[in-house]
Length: 570
Image (cartoon, rainbow, N blue to C red; front, side):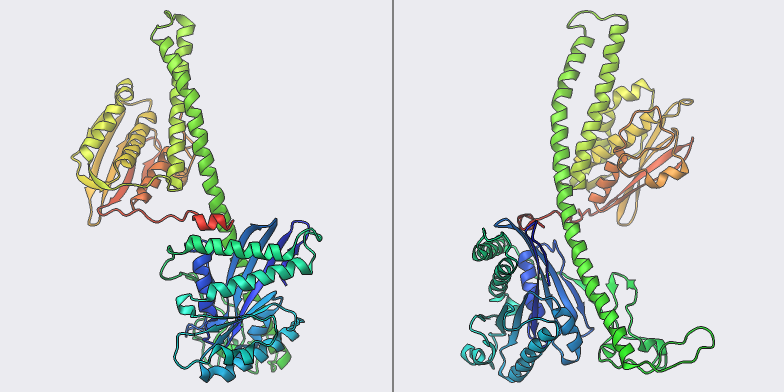
């Protein structure tokens, strides 16, 4: 049974798709997923056989957000329809709040459909659920085929209660599927509000249900016309058993470890309950003994429950991921607004100090002139921090799309050195720039990169020798690697691995001003081109920073929360 929080007016309900094997249950849930999560914000979990039929269940958590003052979440499940998986169907039906019974409309499968309906009644009863009261909706699938029964013929067998509504569908094309889902979700919500007296009599259950239906159709209309052709889903596959037939351990059901992103669960043979008659060998001289039927059942029971819990946890984790993504976007927007707000008063302070320094408000002498100079240095440092924060937040959440065009790196480096000329002259830095190519890249982003790298070479110069900076490029098959070498204070070995993180600096930089964001921006720009960035250094001897830019750059796709997901409060 779904979780109900009366105090917080939260409905967390379970909707199960039930029916014959290959009848369209999983396809129906996939069609719902394409509408509710058009960019796969919450992934569809599927535990399948090697033959691509559903083994345990498909699982889709759906969050409708606030509806008439209620927080509504629906967990969609499908169950395997093949006869040998009867125990699985019983487990997945446990705690169901509503059922969509999917009928294969082909006349040749009528008896299978009737047997499936009988098994639904049986499994509901075994789970302590009343088939006469539980919300059940019927979906007549495969209406596009030739050898099908009419809806009137199907009604005589499957409209077993006056309140059972039937919907025709073609699940592979998404026709009729969402109508079925919306109707089921509506009666599920209405039943829950009425059953638990949510709202304490001050809320009409039918109004809440209608609000849920309206919210679903709004999401449908938003997503329509912008759906991906194929919905990606998380595949939790069942590997064929490679264990030897005579290996006793191979005959014991178990959940094995995660490998390469797939989760291997029970094999088909184990699910047919051919579990063998011996247990695995144990250490020592203990005698082997036959496994009783009860022990076999207990082992299978634990394995199946573990997988059901696993899918639930995965669904919860995916919801948290989507929530964190939304919160991250909000934080980025707050940071950008704050940076812009800080920039205005800082510009005013800088203008005032510059006016005083130039003597426009009267000649300055002694300590007063020193104070104004120190103030200008502080505002310059603050200005750099603000700009770095803004650039970092934009790059982190793809607030700025990189625009690739032909960039003459000789001209770009010349502009960077012209901008940094006051700092270069102040510290008498010698810069050597070797011949540079014309590349395909984002000019603004690479300007930020070399401003940071050359600026760092100036800032972290060694106090006991004249600063020297060398910039050159190496041509490789698929990329060009740009290097910026300095003879400064270098980086301690233990700091190299974390240096590109936000706000990280070398442990030997105390007393030297810096934001700790420059190298983070460098790496994000490299990643944004499909490249990489790294550093080689020895403390006290200088460093070589390298950035690889592909000859044909392509910005990787980010995963921001879509408008539909935001409206669904994912």
